[in-house]
Length: 618
Image 1: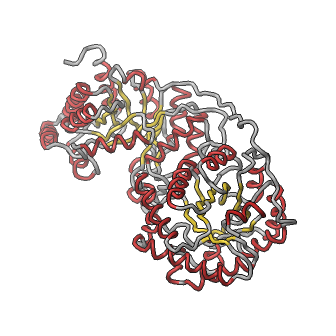
Image 2: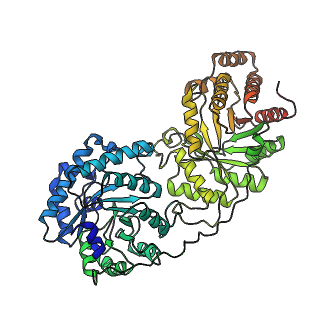
């Protein structure tokens, strides 16, 4: 009996985890897929143990055996060898079994992987990686089906399914991964995803990983899908913990799986297996827990699930409305390094009186510890009525902290964020500190903008949509070619609403940026950075030691002469005004960076920008 027929006739039990079993029971913490070549007896032993426990279905040890994921181990040129060795080992176990066993070739999803090689791969590279692995798996002609598992992203899984269906007539199992029961990360309901995958040709649609039996059972309760859809579930053994050495461990009792086996059957599941933390003991428990192998019909689809009502946010962002037609000044301030905040807030009030359109707040610039900019932003907005633009770094916050901060900002009515990587932690007050970097700045932009749909990080409704506008940092000092345009287009593709640049001292760079935007028909607000120089020593430091900033020789010479003449502040302000003149000839936005809390200097420049709305630029 072939696999497709068997699925329609009885409940099948699949094997469990490979990676966490090798990690926990065998002490192996490396590229698990390479073990197909280096430790074939270990992989064969795992397959045999699952079959001995009663598994009807096993999968190849190839979850991450694609070019993109293997690159992190330097194994990208062994894709074919690793995949074909995996199939041969699984076939050997299949042949040694005392009962019929079906073999699935496993291909894991890419979305959500934090490795830089995977993150930076475009669609074409991802499809090529999948195709290469698929062809390696199919070359032996020994598989009974293909398993696409741990896909967080429905479009990615649909694309993978289409590609696989074009290469083979073998049955295909498509397993999505949810962060919360019944809903995908982008807010799509599991029921809707099942219908879409079935319509796209999947033979079996299911879910695996992240959640244990309790939550995955919830996902299948009252699941209204077409009657001919076959369903699969591969739960984790439970939630992971850490041991005394900080290592991830799963300690879910196999008897818990025994209790859920029959419940899964009654919910209409055709294929029941295990994922992270499961072992052959869990597989044996599933076998024991099934009262019968007879299939139970699941609930047929009747009406589409009604999406929850999401309250729209109130639109704000006055400085973005203004910059479309008028000269607009933003000012960057560093939050205080100590608890003496009187001077800071007095300065902020003076900036407001001068007509500043918004204050951007750095997030521990130069990795130096300061009062949290979110706290300062709340005070500026709620106490002084000033529009804050909060810098949010990927350096200091992991994914959990980033999402929590984003939600907190919305709750305070703060809707403007500059997403940045942040200066390396080792540069600051604590050289031993580490930079987090769970995501890149562009991915942070995408993450922030997801909240605007009213969908949280797990896919659950937030009951309210946010109205974030997100800026991206850009350095016009680095490029005068089309490279700069490609960088901007990439940031825009992730959801960037406007740009804030590094300080410039050469108007040629501003002209090049404006020309590039016009030539490529890119319409995005740009706030060009202006940092008034306070001394020749300050100018020399910026030129020699600050990454991404270079001063023209003419500027350095003027500041050196000013040092001799004793009028450095006046010359620094004059240079800044000349830069503002040049910027305002081609763009509307100016981002004034406050040097050493010199509020008087910045207020003079804010007034200079505002005056340009009264007198047309010549």
